[in-house]
Image (cartoon, rainbow over all chains, first blue to last red):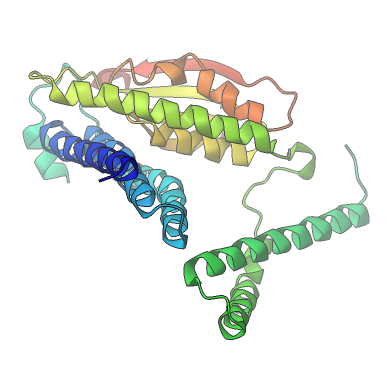
Length: 112
Length: 196
C-alpha cells in the first residue's frame, strides 16, 4: 500500500463520515427545512470527498478527469435541487419550525 | 450608456456568436473527456452530436433570462472567480464541521430562523452565484429570491453569520467588474411564528 492509496482512503472515509452525518441529521432534525440542510449540504461535502478520494486512487488518468467533471456537476446542480425543494415547500405553505414552538413532529408528518 | 438600436443589435449578435463558440467548445471538451477514444470515427461523431445539440438549443440563446439591459452586464474576472471558489470550498468545509458538531450533540442545539435580506448586486449572474453559494454552505438554504430580496433559512446563528455581516455578498460582487459597492441592507431575522 503506497501513500497515494492511503490519501485516497482517507478522503473516502471522510466522505463516508459526512454522508453518515447527513443521514443522522435527516433523522434527528425537526422539520422539513432543517432537514434539507442535512441532506442537501453535508451530503454535498460527503460526495465531493468520496469522489476526490476515488480520483486520487485512480491517479492521473482519464477516469479521474471524468470524476472531476462529475464533481463540478454535483457542485453546480446540488444547490439548485435543494433550493427547488425548499421553494416548493414555501409555496405550498409549509411553515418552518422555530425554537419556541411545541414539538414539531406531528405537524411535520402531516405537512409533508 | 446609450446606444442606437442597430448598434445594440450588432452587439447582441456578437455576444450570441461568442456564446455559441463557448457553448460548442464546452460541449466538445465534455465529449472528448467522456468518450476517451480519439480516432477519426469517434471524434466525428462528437462533432456531429455537438452540432445537433447546438441546433436544438438555438432557441435558448434568444431567451433573455433577465430584464437587465446590457449596460448593467459585467464580465467576470476569472482569477477572482477562482479565488472565490477556493474561499467557498473552505467555507463549505468549515460550516460542514459546524453542522456536524450540532448534529452530534446529545441535545440538538438548533435555532432555525429565516433571514430576510436586501442585497444589491450588479447583475443576475451574481444573484444566481450568491443564491447557490448560500445553499452550498451547510446551514443555510436560499428559499426565495424576489428582486433584490433574499429569503434564507438558517439552522443556527453561527451558520448564517457570513451572510448577515455581508462578507459573502461583497465577495460575490468582487468577482464582477463592477464599481458598485454591494448594498447589504434591511436585514431581518425571523425567529418565531409571529414575525413570519
